[in-house]
Length: 181
Length: 181
DNA sequence: AATTTTATGTCAGCCTTGTTGACATAAAAT
DNA sequence: ATTTTATGTCAACAAGGCTGACATAAAATT
Image (cartoon, rainbow over all chains, first blue to last red; front, side, top):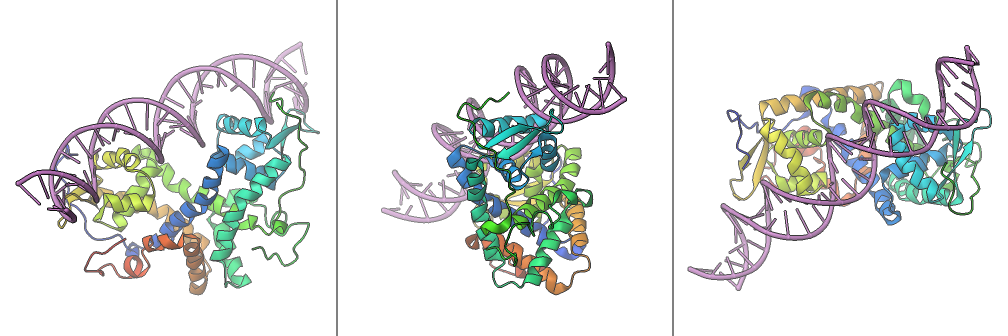
């Protein structure tokens, strides 16, 4: 039963608490929050025979229609071979279409189909509900605090990937209050 | 080149913005924040030949020394077979030790060794730095806002898993009954 | 005391999603 | 005409999930 192959070490019995100047509270909260945040769409995805990888692609293609394969790779930080396997399934099953780049015809611009847009919305809905619940009874300043915290967690050189809030969050089309939920 | 097997669908060219009442901004921020948040320890872990699964185990065993295998499974939400593979490596390489439960000798209480504690601290350090940076110039009320948001993201019935802040953040010695979980 | 349930371990095999390396093609750039 | 770039694709591999089946020791129940 897993006998130590070495000299047995003493078990440490004191819990690791923040007195080392380390922020275990938020580290742990991020783990739990993300675990449950992703569990909602994961359940839906299995009904479609898809996984979390499909979700990410569908999400970003819907958020930035026309983005190229290279741009998508850069956002997801995976290899093209990893992407290809999953993207192909989404294209074959008509959730995403490719269009040759108008300026550079080597590029493949990625767009959602109506089906793909529906899926993106269906996956986002429970996540958005969860967020709304977590932000219930929260002032708009407090909401800003949360957004700024999350932005601050992103590598500075990659913050350009976040739709800089002028382009993707404050959005061209509507909802002058920006009150989602 | 991925010819659609169906009738070709029209590409949708409008970006998915929050006017559907869905909070894409924070959904996306959570993805980016978590992606970069986990990248710090991931890099360290490869030096040890470990992965993210090892990290989670080492983290929670250090935070709740003496937790049982069943409790750990419940926190991680994985199967015992998944856990076993990774836990065995940590035990064999002397980062974690098992102790027979004093009350119930079927149970295996998990404790970190000195080596295991060091590893937990090494992995938490860059994450804590990242959090500190994201919270720089933040009032303590704003910090509370962030914590409450993250807690609100967790499934209500699982919030007991969060060290309720009284047990794990403030008071290392409480709960004489050991009624964790 | 005998039986059943529980906590844990373990073997075997499968799936998803990541990786690397190699090579093909068409279009752009030089 | 040649090289570089954007993309696709094949093959093999690894990590870390999963299920199902079975073993054991200890606790709980009858």
